[in-house]
Length: 531
Image (cartoon, rainbow, N blue to C red; front, top):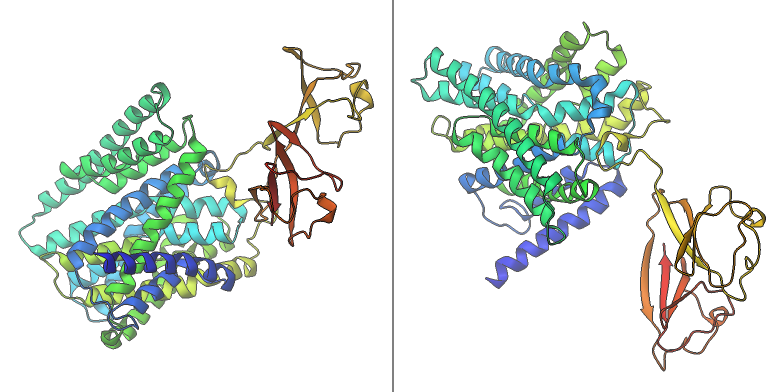
């Protein structure tokens, strides 16, 4: 038991490390997870023998639930509304057109069977939310004409259509499904998915707005259970679980609920973990030694998909809406394939209608090419097309972005030595973006004006903009103990660590803002800011 757990821990730590390295090198993190899976796989260095497609299909399907749910929950509808129509067209008709063009190409040019070609097209029909979100967020890529929102809504909502197409083609390959049965299946997928999604979302919203959780963090557990239920319930009755999960996510994420920002951050972490699981499993399942026969077909299909099928579908749908040509070109290029294609390929591989591994390895190569080539070049293509909006902020398209400037409250005690003692507010030399908000005096709360004089014992509460930069700052605490080298010394005498500063000293319930002459005593708690 200990050895498998140790290997799993090493894998997880390696994924975290490669996430950091990939951002430094400027390559998509998801590509690093694929390569890491190959490193641990049977043809890699570690040589873990893993080929359980059935288990992988179940695990990846669960992971895709959270990716779909977060695709809705993290999307700010206010920002997405201007591009809702083109995004919905791309996520429905766009998927169908891309799947049809790719399927026809596979059949007539590549020589695949009719249904086999359409299966490949269906599996590859949708773009990948995980890849698109990862690249846009990591590069902070704001795009003109609301293109960032367009890509996010499209990639977050088009998996249900690809799943439905894949299920239909697999049913046809199994035989015995009539046209009427296929039509009923499609209607059930859409109707039950919509009804369950809307019903579960508003029931959960009612609970979140009226029920107070007794323990911190249980609201995240509740929403986690809702996400799982939103997939499982419609799936039990023949509905589209992924459609339901996305609808629940977008309804909950765009209504007022408590702790929404922390919930978005929680699901951001969960979704990141799910992305790692899927892409790592893809690499682990692959057999690079068997890929040679599939490399050329995969390359040809990937090129057709990137330069013909996807652009043709985009231009057919967006040109009537008078979208700018350069926007259409960027949307065409950013149609990355990834997590959903992997899950659907594994689903087809374990199904009774399709038992060969060819589809999996073809999709593996296409996803690898898509993430490595198209994903890496998205920023460069955006610059080439003059689509980068330097005044915009891609983080505005997510629900964890706060539109208002966050305000931080600061407490100042007016003691006998304080320079503000016995001075009116109008004479205080405050920074232009800082405001004295409240005075606490003898148990009373005073809202000051310019003539208000600060008295001994007052507690002044000031407001200032919270820091919103991207510097990696951290506050840590250190207790001064007898015998420490810095005990009974002034701060000016200390050898300061690089890029660190003592910003506060806690002493017997008192909080001291130090200077160079502050003497450190045993029992002091130092608050240190380090970059």
